[in-house]
Amino acid sequence: MKIHLLLLITLFAASIVGCSPSKQAHTLSENKAIVLRAEAELWSKGNLAVADELYSPDFVCHFPVGPEWRGLEGIKGEVRRHRTSFPDWHEKVDDIVAEGDRVVIRFTSTGTHQGEFAGIAPTGRKVSIQEIAIFRVVDGKIVEQWGMPDIHGLMEQLRAPNADKRPTP
Image (tube, rainbow, N blue to C red):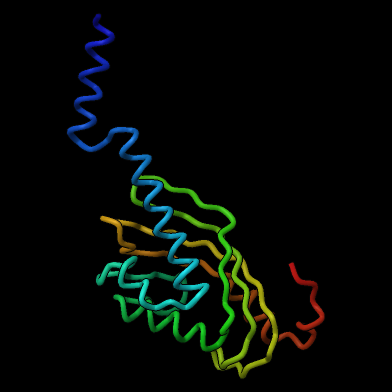
């Protein structure tokens, strides 16, 4: 009897503070779906309109090196610039993990260098890099991101004289 009462009290308390296992699992699932949709529709297809649905107006993206992107126009501008350099840019999510309001992905990005990128004239080379990103999702919107692309590997592929002869992963 004491165990049943204790279990009922625990479940009641958890439901009051929003910590029920089913609610948390549902939220984690929703957060993953939001991030996966951003990768598939915004980055891989260039559908800028989806940014309004998935990102907060207060969005900020941090990088270890380089400028932050801020707001909806910041994310849209970056996608637009990136897809001008690599029109066929595609991001394939290899791993996804969620905990609380955070979603972490490890992904492979590929594209063909058709426009200037970081001062490098178009090479026509196909590139492939590994990336990791951590997203913070609040109320169904991505509010913050920490991006860690292999920019060194990307620049090496664009600048290397024998880059076209490298085996593709």
